[in-house]
Length: 580
Picture 1 (cartoon, rainbow, N blue to C red):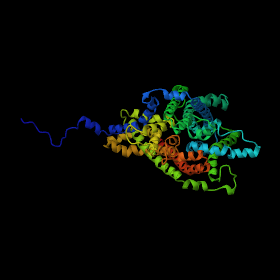
Picture 2 (picture 1 turned 90 degrees about the horizontal axis):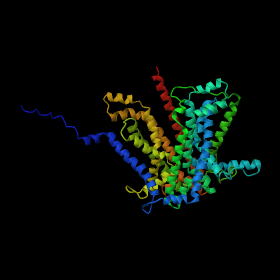
Picture 3 (picture 1 turned 90 degrees about the vertical axis):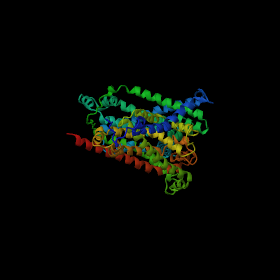
Picture 4 (picture 1 turned 120 degrees about the horizontal axis):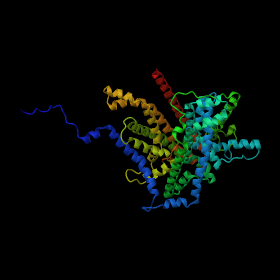
């Protein structure tokens, strides 16, 4: 009996290797791994490898050069003690503000919350310039003090004390946001039990409330500390004039000589400082179960009635906000309108010539255009790449995606100076690909490396809130994975991607710490031009350029706040419909 031939329409399965390539998840994984390797792993490898190489041989000579110079020891010590004191002051301001907003009956809480986090929308360089114009030698506060008391003021903004203060009032929102969130979720039964036992409100706060939110306080303190040791703009504006250096300004000085081996070794030293402090903060946090009174259940925070003290507390809060948030911005605007810095506040001294000079200066116009190119380009690339990495990790559960996510998050813990040095080492004479140093694209590479964690955080958290049942329902209905992503996952992920895009745009638009190390003629940015004009004595022009960029930042920041509230309302509606 003859063998029955196979039907013509049947096709043999593709080979195993071809099937492997036809899986879009593996293709995405390979492409993303290549992207992360080029933009993050390769530059960091260059920093650590070059710090250990001298004339082509392994050596610790670069580190010996760092530690043999007393000025570098002093810069390291200055970095530590200034950052510790600034963080301590930020913790006090942020914690007290969070307690007043979340646990007292003060009015106008929505407005106060927006004003308290407003320093996030103001770049540190702008804050430093604003405080120079308030408390500098001819600043507004200084002039008022001399008129009232006929003597020089008791402060000096160009000093370690000035750096500590400005760092604190710039970074306290880190503490405020984390502590306010913990207070809002914390079960107040322990506080209520103490209150019914006759314990006073101050003792309850000291013995119960603050210890229970200790992890949130330490988390905010860690963010404030890392931001302080990473900051370049504030120590540069307030410290270099007084010959007070920290590690970030020493790295900048080493690169202007230039002395790349010294800058590389100091960059690694700055990384070690950040890692040691990160471990120390984690140990201080203790075990998770030790503070397990913050639960997932719905709780109603106990509100402290201030009584007769309420108007006084509100007055102090508004006065503090006016002084540390609004006055620096007002001083910035005022200085941009005065003929010269320190001029009398009379009608004949007000002018728009600084704005005209900035807009007529080709370099400043080029800086504005470059920033308007770099910020949206970096935000768009990061959001797309981070969304794909987060999807492979959270939803597709692709092997290796978690490692890729972790590697891409590493730069978040690195000081911006280290990222700037890594860009120079990686792209000034690369082992492969084009030479980016001297072009605008090295700045784009630096922004992608620095802000990748921002995109990952926003997209990862949004994906984790999308229940798997939505995608599974689409699959059982016959939809392919790609169509499910297009019609279900992507629309639900869009708010998180948009919020991440705005956050990255705001951060990159006036970025300074990375840009000031790697900019070249023709590739300046807004942040670089503001710093250069301030450093060269053109204070009015620096203020004018800063004021021109503030509306863009503030509008985008308010748009992000609106998106956050819109998403919160949507979740509340969904939760209300799902409740029985």
